[in-house]
Image (cartoon, rainbow, N blue to C red; front, side, top):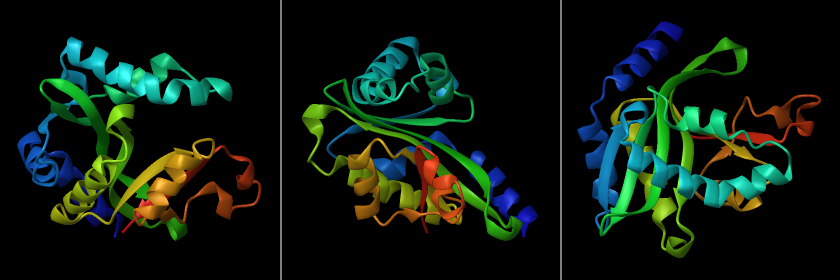
Length: 194
């Protein structure tokens, strides 16, 4: 089973950006959609992307003493990441950072997954179902590539995000720390959507 999951995840990694782009564009027709490998994003785009991330998330993580700018920057612009940028009139309005990977579940079962690292929407664009449409695109991508599920990690200190993902059919995954003794002290949840 693990070899099969690993081969599906490996196959997904070979998916070209155009295929990812087309799935997102079909759900977000009111945006110009661009998909790039994280490490290949142009420096001016990196600045816009990271500014949006910091504007949304830096206060939350600084408040709990867990903000590490370099670590987050390297995670977003990693060579394994795909960055889906949503623009209107050449201005960044939202982005998704994702990776194709495997994740070990209970009983050592291996799953082929789309792992959502970031879903960031500009404040003036919230309430317009952009996040929901991005989640729908991710779910379509997961199905299209015959992967097992979409996964993400979300901070417990971001109750809006926990509720948003719950409203979009994500549940606490079998490996969420809160299922395990002592895990309730962790500051994050691992959620998934099959």
